[in-house]
Length: 140
Ligand code: HEM
Image (cartoon, rainbow, N blue to C red; front, side):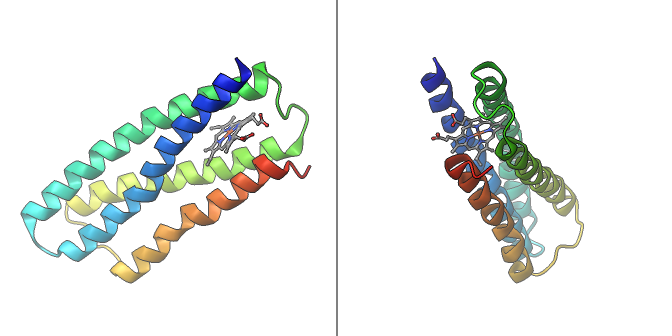
């Protein structure tokens, strides 16, 4: 059961991370769409759907992660789980911030340049690398 839980934890993490990586790309596309109302509307719809789907994927990944931790007791009493959770909270904040930003942008709020948004896009990558490092190296 432990390995099945881990397998499905990974599956839902992958699904959530796909949303985390793609949602900011929609923001870049919105910034490039200019005043084209039809394109903005379509991107807004895609963004809202991806954002909602991401919440469901995150919820399941979280439940399975908590099961691995508190039921199968992987990492209990070790620092890496806490450090990982801190980084996961940052990933979640980035995701929620991006989702709300898309809603504001569709409603007409101004956006930074596409280049600045591409940098904003890289933040989840910079957070995901240490998450994976912590899980695999378990350094403390
Ligand atoms: C949401 C809260 C989360 C909790 C409480 C949690 C907790 C855990 C625990 C306790 C393990 C078991 C480690 C082991 O068996 O050695 C695990 C495995 C793993 N987690 Fe999470 N996790 C969470 C979210 C995430 C996220 C967001 C990612 C990726 C960005 C992630 C990536 C992984 C990976 C790659 C493994 C598998 C390690 C292996 O192959 O042995 N987790 N998680």
